[in-house]
Length: 332
Image 1: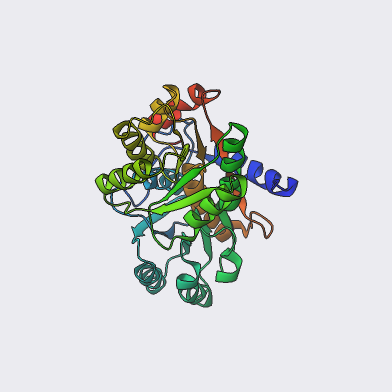
Image 2: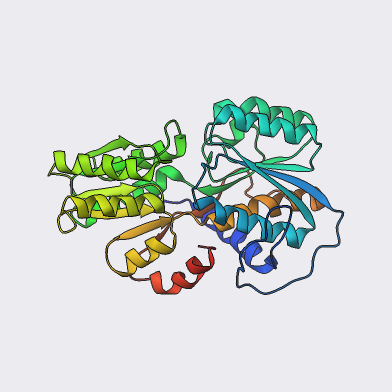
């Protein structure tokens, strides 16, 4: 599957907006980490209140990057940012309703389970509150009622991984899903399977890392034909590495992952992780808030009816040194 030129242009345009407008951190949430970007003036537009609602699972550091980007945009745009989260879609819908009741000026939401959130999003639109989605829901956002979407094409990202593994001689992939019922994760593994037909999924409990480690280790012990493990989040890549070491298969099994953190960066530098697929969560958080500010203050609509893509962006030994400093700051 190839990216359409229009999508590439839209993604580049969104990135240009993010880079040109980035400022220091703040907003209604705790202070963001230093982004390393240039300072800038706070917008003199009317102060807005925007709710950001995600399916963050407790302890998942991935969401720190989302919030960091959102806080930078909120500070620059003179926005009060109200962040809340719940991994259960029904409770996420309640959070959307709470935001409607508090009469916010905009809602940014992740659509990990689009069907469960459709009613809540439609209620927000009926209340004339603009809604954008990010991170999850690129294929369903318009059906749910979201005006714009910022994220990676999960199917494309998975297929990119599968094709890369095939090009490196991989034959049998174990794809690790850490949250049951999350469409985006299932799409990633399905994409991997397109590139490597002999791909099997394993369901683990992402909130219990020790359980993740033991589940992967058990599978590797049972099946010597597995030659690649693909994890769908950086913390789970480290669990997979422990599993590979525990089964003494670091030479016979290779590892790829989605997303980055400081440990994953070092593992790529050391050759323990072959590559990572970065969806650029910092940029997703930034664009979700900034797009609502632009819509409220200037009726701008990014994407023209198609998702604004923030990935997939492959990170491996060829470019990790250029990215490592930003990963250390928590922005990549």
